[in-house]
Image (cartoon, rainbow, N blue to C red):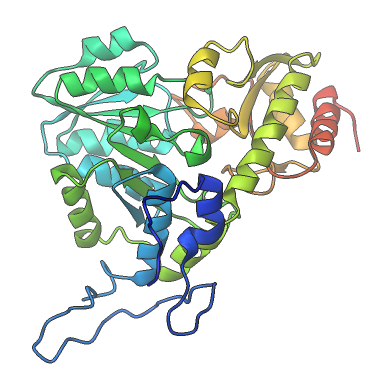
Length: 388
């Protein structure tokens, strides 16, 4: 593998992504690298594995290439890809020990929240849910010597609240805890959490990094290859939380255009947020790019180049009107997920079910790369109750 990591170069994330670090296949000189699908590798005559490849579960060149691109985008010491966003998230918690205390946010990825408050507690983790946007609440939750991890999701999905990464990191580190940031919605184009003091960054790579709704993948990037990181890596191999080489190849292909997709989605989301703010059928727009958003100042400090491609709206006439509006759209697709080239709309409370912190009148919007005027016209018609 030929990957130029010349530290004297100051390439931007956009350039790093576009060239996938500039790899050229040594055998063919192809600028599109081959997919390595081998599950086993030849030993040397003296029974050693000097290639570094032993078996396909932990060892794959295509997977390593995807990891190298993500590490470069995040400015990380190392990265690893896993079979899904959930497998990446649970890998971090499973690297802790029964009895360890962890602090997690009130608003976070719903399936991870359910796992933490269910299976993880039965396994022995002590999980405390706090408003991580409130630094005093985070400080009060710390148990020095017992708290091992603070988990942040910012902006949080689907309410789009902001957490001060540097502020939480300072509090957590003083208590001896590590900080992991779910930065799926921000992406490394907008926020690089390691630069704000985080220890590990998580991405549901299914979303913006891949961006074509055809790969399930997760990714982690670390500020340092410490004992926690090595436990995560060992667990990935032992528990089989791997990503296949074909998926890794598609992820690399998706990452080559992800800066352009993110910039288009951010521009559309900002335009929609501004136009929907005055819409007669909309009671509230939740988007950190709006000056009136309570986390706008933090967003301006942590997010460079845009405020994300996601927003939520609260429909003035309540849950029934929200569900009806989602049923009337034509261009927007009623589907779960985010970060793809197509724009998606979802009545999130229906998806999350009982116990969801999501208001029943809320519609979550993931903007794609379509014309924002077309996206607004479709939403406007749906919200006003107009037929096709």
